[in-house]
Length: 231
Picture 1 (cartoon, rainbow, N blue to C red):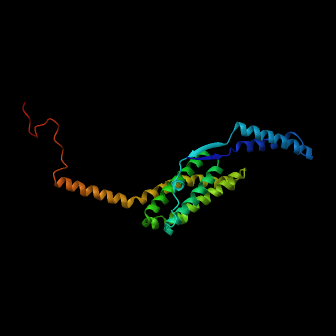
Picture 2: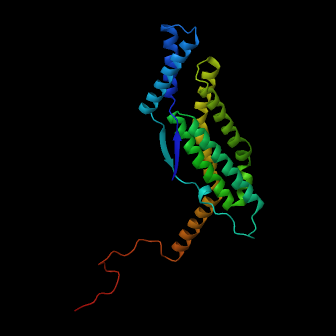
Picture 3: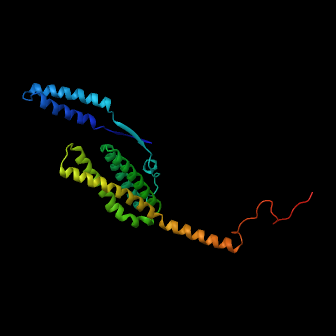
């Protein structure tokens, strides 16, 4: 398990409230006034951190963390190395954004995107012939998702409300639901050929069992289908 720490933003809001309240109730005309307000802000921030501590949570180790470095002299497929590098970069950035964005729903969505991204790339590393199937995912969907989350983080960190900021954040929040579904479908599509092969094997086996007379109902225990032993 990997431990993460997400800083609470409530102490910062409390500090902002202190400055606003002080400006409304007392003058801010001299350095002494600013010093007093700063002192009150520091006390408020320390108290706020004690009341609203940072959130600590754990996430399961991904295949990246379990990935073993190649042995000395062992050749590494450049395509596999590139995929592993892209996976490491994307997951590292998603984790950084997860730590930076305090919203619980978005945090859960980023966790999901991180997990599915790792599974998609791990599958293609194991099945390099499937790489063309995720080219659009790697070249556009994944980097654009990270770009949207970075924009959300910047606007959320601004600490103010406005029509542009609020509208953009709302659009990103709505898009994340769509992206989680899209990432799931991308992973599911990778198993299409394997699912078809298994379905074909099952059909062939069922036909062979029927031809050999092995697919019918078995004789119940204690029935009259077999010889009996008299004592």
